[in-house]
Amino acid sequence: DNDGYVGGIGMRFTDHSPNKSKLIFSTANTNTREIAAFSESGSLGVGLTNPEDYYHTGNQLVVKDYYDGQHAGITIVAGSSYGSRIHFADGTGAASYRGYIIYDHSSDIFQFGTSASTRMVIDSSGNVGINDTSPSFKLDVNGTTRVTGVARFDSTMQFNGNQTIGTVGQWDSLSINPDANLHLGTSSTDDTY
Image 1 (cartoon, rainbow, N blue to C red):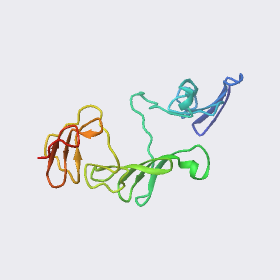
Image 2: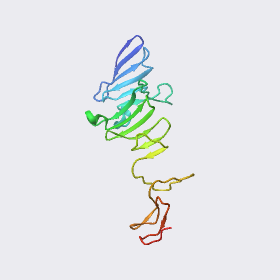
Image 3: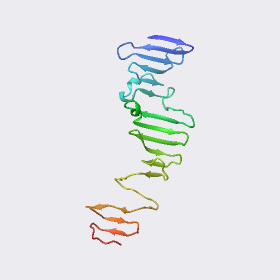
Image 4: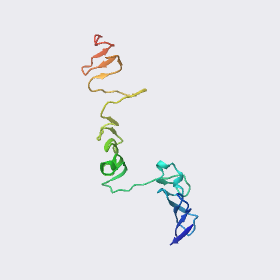
């Protein structure tokens, strides 16, 4: 090992064998309070010194609470008129934000993006928009929605436009049009009420 300490901050190189060397940082003039490490593979550990031991597809940055290992967190700080961002890139330019998570501090809105476009938002009132960036209700979906399983409604349902519930073959088994006519059956000749 090659150790060096400046003003109570320690730094040492360890294990010079191929693919195993590390640069380890400590906060005391000994190696007993080692709080971070760079591994030769490019992994950074904060609060730990063995980031390379974690799964290789997610160990470029590994964060742990140094003191008790119980809690860990990352805080992204931005100005009150700006956004905090995490980008998922597979290139540069527009490919540098193919996927993203943005918190807009000026409007307190979370944005989630795929294919470089916003697909879902959560606004400051807790309204969720899917393919709708300005939701007016607790859940606003712009597009066709499918539910497999049970959709439960514990209060009033309101519909605008034609409503179809279930299909048999090419015909609706139950439909309600805007004139409040109810159609029951499995063929075009079944009765309307």
